Image (cartoon, rainbow, N blue to C red; front, top):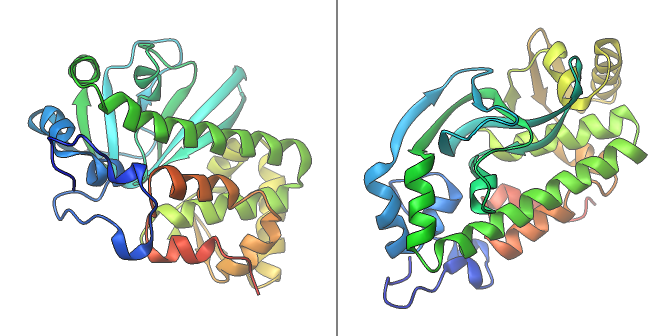
Length: 266
């Protein structure tokens, strides 16, 4: 971590697996890389919290109350056209945070955000977080790097939804989740998957059966086990990897496995 006097972020420099910052206190990649002066503004107000499945972190059109820096688990940003017509726009894990709208100067999100897989996070009151953004000359600039990445992730989600079939989209989604969870098991129901992908539940069931038939996953009731990650990346056919490479460039590597996944399959 850099000194507070220089106000220089590790994220502003090229990253490799060998110079990944280490901070035993946090597992969130943004908190790990935050310069000491900016972390000092937030740290006294960060509270460790457990986030249960489907817990709402943001409600579309309502003021954001708390910002969450994820340590584990997954959050989903979900857009809704009208009741019952919704789809996931982006995923948040240990690489990121909720409350991106605050970083961009707004006090509310246009979309819902809720917990997709049970999570641990550090939460901070939105007003306190906003005060820190106004106090520090560097905090917003650093976090805008993540916000930019998140918008790139969302743009590739839109592209995949428009141009790819459900099997390939599901492959991308599973790899993205695998980046953010411990182990290779995802506790997820077919119903929840249908919301995430914006398709009907029978389509999800068929897509899972196809991936299982190819030996890429094992699908049990309420659980998907990743068997062949490289095969899933190949099926994602370019929809996975480019936004993730930008995260590497803008913020830094998540973990050695994450870096390895960005290499072209053999």
